[in-house]
Length: 335
Ligand SMILES: OC[C@H]1CNC[C@@H](O)[C@@H]1O[C@@H]1O[C@H](CO)[C@@H](O[C@@H]2O[C@H](CO)[C@@H](O[C@@H]3O[C@H](CO)[C@@H](O)[C@H](O)[C@H]3O)[C@H](O)[C@H]2O)[C@H](O)[C@H]1O
Image (cartoon, rainbow, N blue to C red; front, top):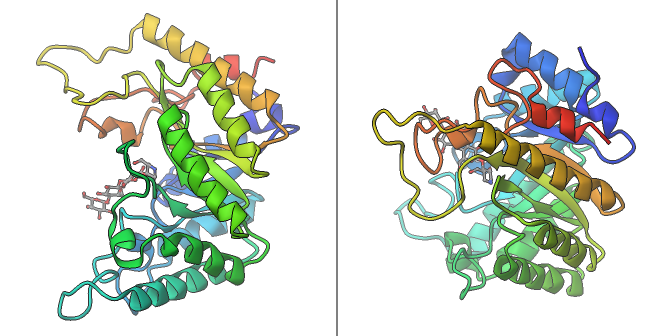
C-alpha cells in the first residue's frame, strides 16, 4: 500500500475527507481513510436538520460514531455546520401555529443548538464551520435572503460566532462558502469577513469549499482569493474539494440517450493538471492554508453523481471506483 496523502503533506497541512457513518462501516473505505487522511468532516450528520430533527430531540447517533472513529484513530475532526439555510429542520423557523418566529425566539433557538452541539464535542472537534453560504448567488446582492436573514437581519451571523466561541473558546471558527475564487463572490465574502473582523467577532478563518472543475478556477483567481482573505489575518482552509469533469455553468443538461459518460483521456489529463496546479498553490501558501479536505472519499460515491444533474456519473476525486489512486493522485504527491 503506497504511503498516503497525509504523509506527503505532514509538513504542510492536515488532509481530510468528508464521510458518512455508513462509510465507516465499509472495510475498503475504512482502510483507504486510515491510510490516506488525518482529518474527517461529517458530510451531513452534524447539520442542523439531521442532528436536531425536533426542538426537544437531538439525533446524535451518526455524528457520535464519526467522532468516536476519529478519536479511536487519532484523526482531527472539522464540525460542519452550525448555521445554514439548507438542511435546516422544519421546526426551527416556525411557531406551533406555523407562523414565522420572532428574531428573539430564533436567536435563542440558535444559541441552544450551538451551545448543545459544540459542548458535546468540545475538545474532539478542532474547527467548526459556524456559518455556511450566507452570501447571495446574485452578484448584485450581498447577504442571501434566507429565513435567517428575513427574521434576524445580518445579526444571526455575528451571534452564531459569539455562541460558538462561548461554547468552545479553543475551537477554530470558520465562515464557509463556495465560488470564492470568482472575483464578484470573493469581494462580497471579503466584505462580510472584514465586517466581522472589524467588529471583533471571534472568526478565525474562512473555508473555501473548492467545488471546482477541470475548467475553473484559474491560478490567478485562486492565489488572489487566498491572499485577500489572509490579508485579514484569517486562516484559510480548503473544506470541500472536488474537481468535476463537467463545467459549473447554468442549465447543465443530462446525458442524451446512448451518450456515454464522457470521462475521456483528455478530460482526465485536464483533471490531473488542475489537481497538480491547485496543490502546488496550497504548498506555496502553506503559512495560510491550514487544512485541505476532500468532499467524499472516491468516485465510487460522490454527491456530484446527483448534482446538478441527477444520475449523471462524475469522477471528481483522487480515488477511482475501486478505491485505487488515480493518475491525479500520483501527481499530487509528486513534489
Ligand atoms: O452540496 C454540496 C455541499 C455544498 N456545501 C455544503 C455541503 O454541506 C454540501 O454537502 C451536500 O449537502 C447536500 C444537501 O444540501 C447533501 O445532500 C443530502 O444528503 C442527505 C443524506 O444523504 C439526503 O437525505 C437523505 O435523503 C434520502 C432520500 O432523499 C432519505 O431516504 C434519507 O433518509 C435522507 O437522509 C438529502 O436528500 C440530500 O439533499 C449532500 O449529501 C452533501 O454532500
